[in-house]
Length: 390
Image (cartoon, rainbow, N blue to C red):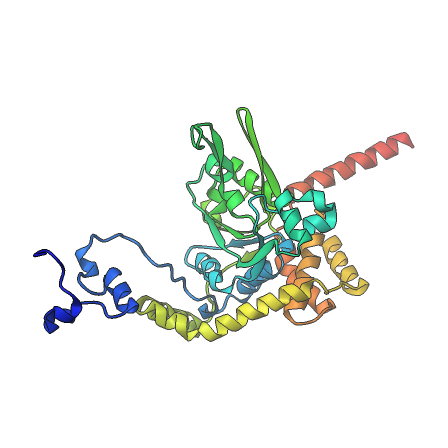
């Protein structure tokens, strides 16, 4: 009995001050707000990601427009930012985090979606999702698009997947998902894309074009979904990008330094304010950021209704023909970008002015001096053959 804990009413009133009187006080004590201090523990070395606000960037209108169009319509086939160091390419891409729209994500381990049933029938989904669909239960939930960054030192196994020996519960090998699979329905950012190994870049672009990719390791194989929008950035001083890789990026933006003196001064002041108090400048642009995020969401919905009349389409085709661009990807990117711009302007019909607005981003860097010379020489040979046959 001597070791029995006294009741609260029998205790000294001074000691009762330290006893939790409610669930909130108990939680406060358990989480460390009382009794011990956080600085008594070792530093975990963790950092909170607070990117520079996208809307706080000064100038660079074309770059910002291209990135926003990629959020609204992944069919523009991504964006490539080309420019020297220190022009805000990486900061702009990371600032998109606060503007990401909501998309439906599957609740199923196998990724079953309602459109699978609508296009392939009830047998196109797993039995559990078939049951849910028949009972009217949702197969998806709304989630924000995430920004997935590809580290510069990534190898092919990191990108597509790697075989893990004895990883399963029974000790059998299995394939670990790669970055491409994790980027499904997200935004994949590849910084210094011209510095990556060719095999890595090829796998990324092929997966983005097909929407799926297959990994084979020994006797194991797995096919993963890879439906993502890709954004790349590069400094041409550090190396060129292969033509076949460049052709896979829909929009191309040449990013240069701010030409106006006052703009450069304003950019410095905003960066200085961000370095002094990150949360303050984020809060300053919070209202505009929320409004922009809502506009992006509504533009994605309106995009389904935007049509392309013959007049602006023919204008765009004449531009492509006069530039002597052979790749049909230029046509697709130009028209999808024009539809996207119309949706962002709250219109359901593309106008000729939309074609002219997006044409520089969609058509630049698509001509090849080598192909021009090659085709010119081929034309001479064809003409000689015709003359000899006559």
